[in-house]
Length: 329
Image (tube, rainbow, N blue to C red):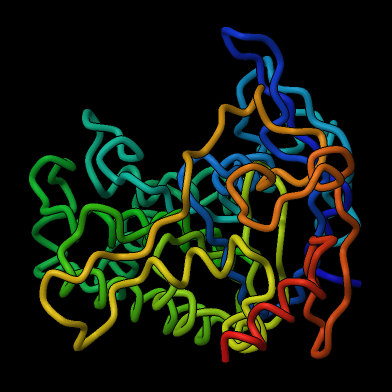
């Protein structure tokens, strides 16, 4: 049995212009110890997807489909039961640690809270464990800083504290939602190395959201490419990077800066702009921005086509795209 199995997940959000499908029928499985990345532009549904796994969606959101964690169905699970999993069996590192941390509580209290709630530790025991966790994630002079507040730490240190909180109870699944946003490149590297090391050390499954394709290449064994609330391409990371079968995936890769490129060279861009969720076509969400768009693309959602190496792509014009690529080569 997979640790996590998501099938035909739909999430509908209420907007000022009416209901909009933020997640449109996605599915994937994750085994124990397996690592998976999710990439895509802002607004494509990455964070909404993982928030649905955690039961952290707005109260007005409507969720359908299935999310099974070790065989337990999470869609429709009462909040009391969800609280038993959240922070215990499933941990999450949030994108912005300053908003994830409570400004009026000390670090010792916040890191120790999951241990008191889920493990029944006393305040003194939780404090001792919090110290060990802060030392493990590299907080300097942790013993003297247990009673400090979030604003007294740097951005990189706050993210390390967020990691310590997520790991406090030794979760089976760790979700990292763009954990290096707004950090300089040196601190980014340290945080990512820390997460990778802890995941390997503790045998956790990992879902990593990132805009950075280089981070995905170095950190996860398989990946999902999302656009418009849909998974347009998925498979082993090496296969997706090698093939880049979907036009949207090709656009993301083409927009990367190239090392050694001539000065002043403009980056390639994907034409058009990301549409509002309520304006997405009923068919392929990338229809209209894609140069291969035909009427059929906008009418019906394309089925997933299986390629070698467990690689799957949702596009009805793969043969034409491959022919163009072959001619260009």
